[in-house]
Amino acid sequence: MRTTLDTEDDVLLAANELARRGGTTAGRVISHLTTRLPERTAGRAIAERLAVATATRHHAFWADAVSILESGRIAWNAVLGSRQVSDVYLLALVVQQGGCPVMLDRAVSLQAVSEAKSHHLVVI
Image (tube, rainbow, N blue to C red; front, top):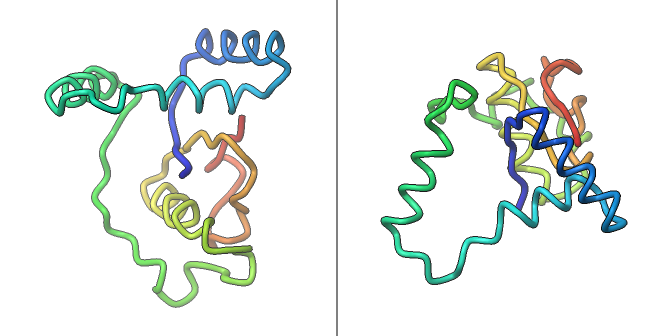
């Protein structure tokens, strides 16, 4: 599973430092930290954490209004496998909304979405 996030500079600096100390990547550090919810966390606690995380100016919810089946939107020859389909969909949504996600890996190709430019994607 892949995710996108908007991170503050100090969080990224801390992740880079933890990665350096642990001999890994900042992406893996952030992935590890963001997936550490206890399995038995109550629904209410998860909802509260989500509300706090999304209550900043850095977050916006977008309508699920992009079709990757629309002719010409996706260059399917640039999609290397089934695991990239959700990433390509998210990139197409970002392009439509004029946003910029932060990805934890380089698996998604800008060439896969017809109107995607380098300012539409940040990889850490």
